[in-house]
Length: 386
Image 1 (cartoon, rainbow, N blue to C red):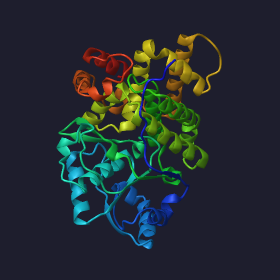
Image 2 (image 1 turned 90 degrees about the horizontal axis):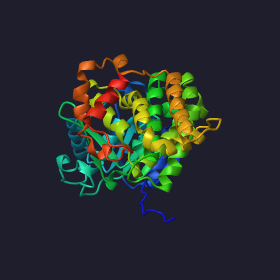
Image 3 (image 1 turned 45 degrees about the horizontal axis):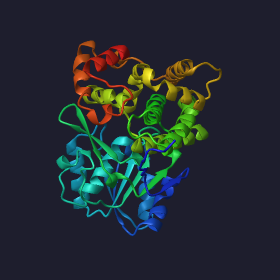
């Protein structure tokens, strides 16, 4: 059987090192000639004390560092523009994103905007970025979004709509995976971001158009690591082994879906973030079960394969194994402690039709789903999640 043609891209370099952020200056000084750094993060990490040792390391290695800590969840365009302005004022020649997915997404776009004249409004979509960018370093503090290894940045447009910039320029030059940075994550955030990462792996593995052997291999290993360690990481935040496995799993899932894109779970999750400011990982967790069940008629053979990956014992035909996989994911989410219903996070039933209409704007994602999702189907999925 012949192989379908495919292209696989990822970041240039990944380092995995417990405590690596505390030695970041030495590491970057050896890799880059740039010495005027813009460090992009959020105020919560500054208050938590995570940024001070990183700053000390950078400054001790000869870097002049400007900190932009105004990143918020579901970042709007004005945050991107403000960050790019700070980069220009500081004459930054290297961008460092340290934080959750929002900080990393802002860092990607700031690196592009600071190096060229193309307006952000022209970048939305796939392959629309025309210029280059500044050197880019990304350091995740959550095991979830995989943004550190994707070529995607998600920004909120207007009041509620999320739009993506997808371009090869957004792949970082260097990624540091330091699981010590994730030790302080509370159980709910650990659960939501971990389930988010599993959604990436599952949707990459079942993606309709760009599924490929390399993404498949990464998705399987990601799901194995994540499913085996999620509950332990939620129950014991200081479990080093679980934290390291979760962070690596999230990154592998990110590499998978950067090349075999996500689908309906994400398309339905984005309006929840836009309208209700539900964190991205949690909104994915809330929509996962309904979409898994909806897609099962087409994706059952792949779900059966994933049942083997997560170690579900027993036999049965493809349909039985697929059902066992869906039930495994439901049980895992229950054990993690994450909210399970839209009503549990103050979503109102009368808003579901509006959410369904907004989900239809996510054509970039819906086209990847194993089964078509129209507005009525989207409404039924929200109702199932309610």
